[in-house]
Length: 315
Image (cartoon, rainbow, N blue to C red; front, side, top):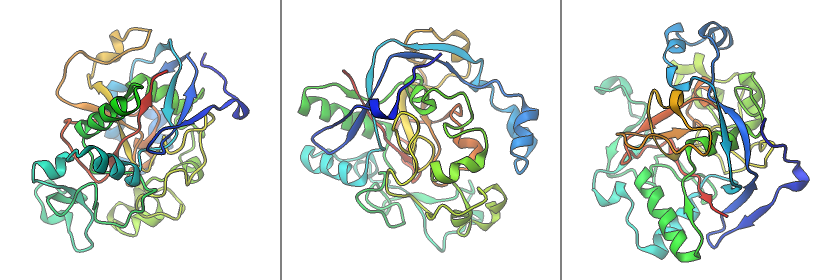
Protein backbone atom coordinates (compact mmCIF):
# COMPACT_ATOMS: atom_id res chain seq x y z
CA UNK A 1 0.00 0.00 0.00
CA UNK A 2 1.30 3.44 -0.83
CA UNK A 3 4.31 4.30 -2.91
CA UNK A 4 7.90 4.37 -1.70
CA UNK A 5 9.89 7.46 -2.66
CA UNK A 6 13.60 7.59 -1.89
CA UNK A 7 15.21 10.92 -0.99
CA UNK A 8 17.43 10.66 -4.06
CA UNK A 9 14.32 10.44 -6.26
CA UNK A 10 12.61 13.63 -5.01
CA UNK A 11 11.90 15.88 -7.97
CA UNK A 12 11.50 19.59 -7.15
CA UNK A 13 10.36 22.45 -9.41
CA UNK A 14 10.13 26.21 -8.79
CA UNK A 15 7.49 28.62 -10.10
CA UNK A 16 7.62 32.35 -10.81
CA UNK A 17 6.83 33.29 -7.19
CA UNK A 18 9.66 31.12 -5.92
CA UNK A 19 7.34 28.37 -4.65
CA UNK A 20 8.93 24.92 -4.64
CA UNK A 21 6.84 21.90 -5.62
CA UNK A 22 7.65 18.23 -5.06
CA UNK A 23 6.40 15.68 -7.58
CA UNK A 24 4.40 12.96 -5.83
CA UNK A 25 3.65 9.68 -7.58
CA UNK A 26 0.28 8.07 -8.05
CA UNK A 27 -0.41 5.50 -5.36
CA UNK A 28 -2.74 4.03 -2.76
CA UNK A 29 -3.10 4.50 0.97
CA UNK A 30 -5.49 3.93 3.84
CA UNK A 31 -7.18 7.21 4.76
CA UNK A 32 -8.57 8.12 8.17
CA UNK A 33 -8.22 6.63 11.62
CA UNK A 34 -10.00 3.92 13.59
CA UNK A 35 -8.06 4.26 16.84
CA UNK A 36 -10.31 3.46 19.80
CA UNK A 37 -10.90 6.19 22.38
CA UNK A 38 -9.08 4.10 24.99
CA UNK A 39 -5.86 4.10 22.98
CA UNK A 40 -6.07 7.83 22.36
CA UNK A 41 -6.80 8.55 26.02
CA UNK A 42 -3.68 6.61 27.00
CA UNK A 43 -1.55 8.51 24.48
CA UNK A 44 -2.95 11.94 25.38
CA UNK A 45 -3.75 11.76 29.12
CA UNK A 46 -3.83 15.55 29.44
CA UNK A 47 -7.03 15.83 27.40
CA UNK A 48 -10.58 15.28 28.71
CA UNK A 49 -11.79 11.80 27.73
CA UNK A 50 -14.86 13.15 25.93
CA UNK A 51 -12.58 14.59 23.24
CA UNK A 52 -11.85 11.06 22.01
CA UNK A 53 -15.49 10.22 21.30
CA UNK A 54 -15.95 13.21 18.98
CA UNK A 55 -13.89 11.93 16.05
CA UNK A 56 -16.50 10.04 14.04
CA UNK A 57 -15.62 11.95 10.87
CA UNK A 58 -12.12 10.38 10.89
CA UNK A 59 -13.61 7.01 9.98
CA UNK A 60 -14.15 4.55 8.63
CA UNK A 61 -10.61 3.92 7.47
CA UNK A 62 -10.89 3.41 3.73
CA UNK A 63 -8.69 2.69 0.76
CA UNK A 64 -7.94 5.64 -1.52
CA UNK A 65 -6.17 5.51 -4.85
CA UNK A 66 -4.54 8.67 -6.20
CA UNK A 67 -4.53 7.83 -9.89
CA UNK A 68 -2.26 10.59 -11.22
CA UNK A 69 1.00 12.08 -10.08
CA UNK A 70 0.88 15.72 -8.97
CA UNK A 71 3.14 18.46 -7.65
CA UNK A 72 2.61 19.35 -3.97
CA UNK A 73 3.91 22.57 -2.46
CA UNK A 74 7.11 21.74 -0.61
CA UNK A 75 6.28 24.47 1.89
CA UNK A 76 3.28 26.48 2.95
CA UNK A 77 2.79 29.69 0.98
CA UNK A 78 4.93 32.36 2.61
CA UNK A 79 4.23 35.97 3.51
CA UNK A 80 6.66 37.11 0.83
CA UNK A 81 5.09 34.94 -1.87
CA UNK A 82 1.59 36.11 -0.97
CA UNK A 83 2.76 39.72 -1.01
CA UNK A 84 4.20 39.30 -4.50
CA UNK A 85 0.88 37.82 -5.66
CA UNK A 86 -1.10 40.74 -4.18
CA UNK A 87 1.23 43.32 -5.72
CA UNK A 88 1.29 41.68 -9.15
CA UNK A 89 -2.44 40.87 -9.37
CA UNK A 90 -4.06 43.78 -7.56
CA UNK A 91 -6.12 41.28 -5.55
CA UNK A 92 -7.48 42.60 -2.25
CA UNK A 93 -7.62 39.83 0.38
CA UNK A 94 -10.96 39.41 2.13
CA UNK A 95 -9.78 40.62 5.54
CA UNK A 96 -9.10 43.99 3.91
CA UNK A 97 -11.81 44.02 1.23
CA UNK A 98 -14.71 43.55 3.65
CA UNK A 99 -13.27 45.94 6.23
CA UNK A 100 -13.67 43.55 9.15
CA UNK A 101 -10.04 42.46 9.39
CA UNK A 102 -8.72 39.23 10.82
CA UNK A 103 -7.49 37.89 14.15
CA UNK A 104 -4.29 38.56 16.02
CA UNK A 105 -2.27 38.11 19.15
CA UNK A 106 -2.01 41.00 21.60
CA UNK A 107 -0.18 40.80 24.90
CA UNK A 108 -2.91 42.54 26.91
CA UNK A 109 -5.80 40.61 25.43
CA UNK A 110 -7.69 38.40 27.89
CA UNK A 111 -9.83 35.63 26.35
CA UNK A 112 -11.80 35.35 29.60
CA UNK A 113 -13.33 38.78 29.01
CA UNK A 114 -14.90 37.76 25.68
CA UNK A 115 -18.13 35.92 24.92
CA UNK A 116 -16.45 33.14 22.92
CA UNK A 117 -13.28 32.91 24.99
CA UNK A 118 -11.24 32.90 21.80
CA UNK A 119 -7.47 32.70 22.17
CA UNK A 120 -7.02 35.63 19.76
CA UNK A 121 -8.46 39.08 19.33
CA UNK A 122 -10.72 39.76 16.33
CA UNK A 123 -12.15 40.26 13.93
CA UNK A 124 -10.42 43.61 13.98
CA UNK A 125 -9.26 45.75 11.02
CA UNK A 126 -5.81 46.09 12.58
CA UNK A 127 -5.20 42.39 11.85
CA UNK A 128 -4.83 40.86 8.39
CA UNK A 129 -2.39 38.71 6.42
CA UNK A 130 0.05 41.59 6.87
CA UNK A 131 -0.29 41.65 10.65
CA UNK A 132 -1.24 38.63 12.79
CA UNK A 133 -0.12 40.52 15.91
CA UNK A 134 3.33 38.93 16.08
CA UNK A 135 6.45 39.43 14.00
CA UNK A 136 6.80 37.48 10.77
CA UNK A 137 9.48 37.52 8.11
CA UNK A 138 8.85 36.96 4.42
CA UNK A 139 9.83 33.31 4.91
CA UNK A 140 7.07 32.61 7.46
CA UNK A 141 3.75 31.02 6.39
CA UNK A 142 1.09 33.58 5.52
CA UNK A 143 -1.93 33.38 7.85
CA UNK A 144 -5.23 35.25 8.19
CA UNK A 145 -6.04 34.15 4.64
CA UNK A 146 -9.42 32.75 3.63
CA UNK A 147 -10.30 29.77 1.45
CA UNK A 148 -11.46 32.33 -1.10
CA UNK A 149 -8.06 34.08 -0.93
CA UNK A 150 -6.40 30.73 -1.64
CA UNK A 151 -8.66 30.22 -4.65
CA UNK A 152 -7.74 33.67 -5.96
CA UNK A 153 -4.02 32.92 -5.62
CA UNK A 154 -4.41 29.60 -7.46
CA UNK A 155 -6.45 31.19 -10.25
CA UNK A 156 -3.95 34.00 -10.76
CA UNK A 157 -0.99 31.61 -10.86
CA UNK A 158 -2.82 29.35 -13.31
CA UNK A 159 -3.45 32.24 -15.69
CA UNK A 160 0.02 33.75 -15.28
CA UNK A 161 1.94 30.50 -15.84
CA UNK A 162 -0.37 28.45 -18.05
CA UNK A 163 -0.37 25.53 -15.58
CA UNK A 164 -3.25 24.60 -13.32
CA UNK A 165 -2.75 25.49 -9.66
CA UNK A 166 -5.32 24.59 -7.03
CA UNK A 167 -5.78 23.54 -3.43
CA UNK A 168 -5.14 19.86 -2.76
CA UNK A 169 -8.10 17.60 -2.24
CA UNK A 170 -8.40 16.31 1.29
CA UNK A 171 -7.31 12.86 0.08
CA UNK A 172 -4.24 14.27 -1.70
CA UNK A 173 -3.36 16.22 1.42
CA UNK A 174 -3.47 13.18 3.73
CA UNK A 175 -1.63 11.05 1.15
CA UNK A 176 1.13 13.68 1.01
CA UNK A 177 1.23 14.14 4.79
CA UNK A 178 1.50 10.44 5.54
CA UNK A 179 4.19 9.88 2.89
CA UNK A 180 3.73 6.14 3.12
CA UNK A 181 3.25 6.01 6.91
CA UNK A 182 0.24 4.79 8.92
CA UNK A 183 1.25 6.37 12.22
CA UNK A 184 -0.40 9.36 13.90
CA UNK A 185 2.28 11.63 12.51
CA UNK A 186 4.62 11.07 9.61
CA UNK A 187 7.42 10.96 12.22
CA UNK A 188 5.75 8.26 14.34
CA UNK A 189 3.02 7.71 16.93
CA UNK A 190 4.67 9.51 19.84
CA UNK A 191 3.57 13.18 20.16
CA UNK A 192 7.12 13.98 21.26
CA UNK A 193 8.29 13.04 17.76
CA UNK A 194 6.89 16.41 16.70
CA UNK A 195 9.64 18.33 18.48
CA UNK A 196 11.91 17.87 15.48
CA UNK A 197 9.22 17.56 12.82
CA UNK A 198 6.63 20.26 13.55
CA UNK A 199 6.00 23.66 15.05
CA UNK A 200 3.06 23.00 17.38
CA UNK A 201 1.96 24.19 20.84
CA UNK A 202 4.96 23.56 23.08
CA UNK A 203 6.65 24.95 26.18
CA UNK A 204 7.70 28.12 24.33
CA UNK A 205 4.11 28.83 23.19
CA UNK A 206 2.68 27.89 26.59
CA UNK A 207 4.61 30.78 28.11
CA UNK A 208 2.06 33.05 26.45
CA UNK A 209 -0.97 30.87 27.31
CA UNK A 210 -0.09 29.36 30.72
CA UNK A 211 -3.61 28.08 31.37
CA UNK A 212 -3.12 25.61 28.49
CA UNK A 213 0.37 24.54 29.57
CA UNK A 214 -0.76 20.96 30.37
CA UNK A 215 -1.66 20.54 26.69
CA UNK A 216 1.77 21.65 25.45
CA UNK A 217 4.38 19.39 23.92
CA UNK A 218 7.07 18.66 26.50
CA UNK A 219 9.99 20.61 25.13
CA UNK A 220 10.86 23.87 23.45
CA UNK A 221 11.14 23.95 19.66
CA UNK A 222 12.45 27.52 19.67
CA UNK A 223 9.33 29.21 18.27
CA UNK A 224 6.44 30.70 20.22
CA UNK A 225 4.58 31.72 17.05
CA UNK A 226 5.11 30.82 13.38
CA UNK A 227 8.53 29.62 12.23
CA UNK A 228 10.21 30.14 8.85
CA UNK A 229 8.95 27.44 6.51
CA UNK A 230 11.24 24.44 6.36
CA UNK A 231 12.66 24.97 9.86
CA UNK A 232 11.79 21.41 10.90
CA UNK A 233 12.59 18.00 9.44
CA UNK A 234 10.70 17.07 6.25
CA UNK A 235 8.63 13.93 5.87
CA UNK A 236 9.80 11.00 3.77
CA UNK A 237 8.64 12.70 0.58
CA UNK A 238 10.53 15.92 1.19
CA UNK A 239 7.52 17.99 2.32
CA UNK A 240 7.88 20.42 5.22
CA UNK A 241 5.43 21.54 7.90
CA UNK A 242 2.66 19.12 6.95
CA UNK A 243 2.11 19.03 10.70
CA UNK A 244 2.03 22.39 12.45
CA UNK A 245 3.11 25.96 11.62
CA UNK A 246 -0.19 26.83 9.85
CA UNK A 247 -3.43 24.99 9.22
CA UNK A 248 -3.82 24.42 5.49
CA UNK A 249 -7.02 24.88 3.51
CA UNK A 250 -7.96 22.00 1.22
CA UNK A 251 -10.47 21.98 -1.62
CA UNK A 252 -13.20 19.82 -0.07
CA UNK A 253 -16.44 20.64 1.60
CA UNK A 254 -16.65 18.86 4.96
CA UNK A 255 -19.10 16.02 5.52
CA UNK A 256 -19.32 13.96 8.72
CA UNK A 257 -20.43 10.85 6.84
CA UNK A 258 -18.44 11.29 3.63
CA UNK A 259 -15.80 8.66 4.37
CA UNK A 260 -18.45 5.90 4.56
CA UNK A 261 -19.32 6.39 0.90
CA UNK A 262 -16.11 7.85 -0.46
CA UNK A 263 -15.05 6.58 -3.89
CA UNK A 264 -11.75 4.73 -4.04
CA UNK A 265 -10.34 6.74 -6.94
CA UNK A 266 -9.45 10.41 -6.42
CA UNK A 267 -12.20 11.40 -3.96
CA UNK A 268 -13.25 15.03 -4.25
CA UNK A 269 -15.34 15.40 -1.09
CA UNK A 270 -19.06 16.16 -0.85
CA UNK A 271 -20.72 17.94 -3.76
CA UNK A 272 -21.94 20.72 -1.49
CA UNK A 273 -21.64 21.96 2.05
CA UNK A 274 -21.26 24.99 4.29
CA UNK A 275 -17.69 24.64 5.57
CA UNK A 276 -14.35 23.80 3.92
CA UNK A 277 -11.81 21.43 5.44
CA UNK A 278 -8.47 22.54 6.83
CA UNK A 279 -5.72 20.13 7.81
CA UNK A 280 -2.43 19.72 9.65
CA UNK A 281 -2.56 21.90 12.74
CA UNK A 282 -0.61 25.06 13.50
CA UNK A 283 1.96 26.62 15.80
CA UNK A 284 -0.82 26.99 18.40
CA UNK A 285 -2.33 23.51 17.97
CA UNK A 286 -2.20 20.89 20.70
CA UNK A 287 -0.36 17.79 19.42
CA UNK A 288 -3.52 15.65 19.43
CA UNK A 289 -5.10 17.89 16.78
CA UNK A 290 -2.04 17.82 14.55
CA UNK A 291 -2.46 14.11 13.74
CA UNK A 292 -2.45 13.15 10.06
CA UNK A 293 -6.08 11.99 10.21
CA UNK A 294 -7.56 14.91 12.14
CA UNK A 295 -10.11 17.03 10.26
CA UNK A 296 -11.13 20.59 11.04
CA UNK A 297 -13.22 23.04 9.06
CA UNK A 298 -14.39 26.63 8.68
CA UNK A 299 -16.58 28.77 6.45
CA UNK A 300 -14.76 29.77 3.23
CA UNK A 301 -14.53 33.42 4.32
CA UNK A 302 -12.89 32.57 7.67
CA UNK A 303 -9.59 34.31 8.28
CA UNK A 304 -7.60 33.36 11.34
CA UNK A 305 -4.13 33.82 12.72
CA UNK A 306 -3.51 30.05 12.52
CA UNK A 307 -4.73 29.29 8.99
CA UNK A 308 -2.66 29.39 5.79
CA UNK A 309 -2.27 27.80 2.35
CA UNK A 310 -0.41 25.03 0.53
CA UNK A 311 -0.97 24.64 -3.20
CA UNK A 312 -0.87 21.84 -5.75
CA UNK A 313 0.29 22.19 -9.34
CA UNK A 314 -1.07 19.67 -11.78
CA UNK A 315 1.10 17.80 -14.26
